Amino acid sequence: MTETVLRFDDVTLRYGRLTALDQVSLNVPAGAIYGFLGPNGAGKTSAIRCAMGLIRPQSGQISIGGADVFRQRRRALASVGAIIETPALFPNLTGRENLEVTRQVLGTPRARMDEVLEIVDMAHEAHRRVGQYSLGMRQRIGLARALLTRPKLLILDEPTNGLDPAGIRDMRELIRDLPQRTGATIFMSSHLLSEVEHIASHVGLLQNGRVLFNGSLKELADQQQARLIVDAEPAEQAENVLDRFAPGAWVRDGARFTLTGDCPRTPQDIAALNAALVEAGCAVSALHLEEADLESTFLTLTRSAASPQEDAA
Image (tube, rainbow, N blue to C red):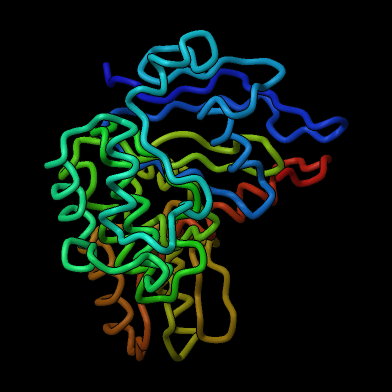
């Protein structure tokens, strides 16, 4: 049985009449990169604040490593590192001096500073004042600080927010390597679905404080239907061929044919379809299987979900 590092059980949080989290249940397995996804205002930051013990929900339970966050706070949070929103750093101190302040408070060995600076690729910039850093460099120093205690769970709230495309790519590559390099499980919130899709092994989809999906990325993909796209002319001849493969199931738009659901998936099936079209005298300009990506999957789920309440912070 896979160990669960972070678990929410029917967590409900209200701010007056506004329900920020509505019976949220999710579990983050050990070693995962868990993408906690949803549009701005879905309730992601509220969930993270609850997980860190900063806000107490009205009902439900949250545990980290099997310890209740509110009843066993010290034990639960002892193995957690976090960056919530923008890291608070001293701009007049260097990157290393900022780490030293935290290191002394935590009582971690001095050598650990060199280790975490290497992990986040800031060893050569640690002598500079933080006020001279770019936003991406600040994020890296904040991440280094969160890693000082060798956390088993690393919570990152919108770690790529505000970064330029190059910074997003660099942060994405850094996060992807963290479980192997540090042994930490990553819980990362984001509204950038396309970015998380590149690195996450598991996802939780949140909308209006409600969980639409919780599980592995593969399980989510298996729920969605792929589409087979065919562009072939003459369209009438192509239609005759395609109907032999899936009678009456194709949607035609000019010379483009789309088959959704139970369609040929293997290279052999698609090659056979292409050969049949060519043999029938059709000119095939496109023939490819289009898998549903995370963004289209999320849109499908959110369209079908009821959303009677307002967005939550």
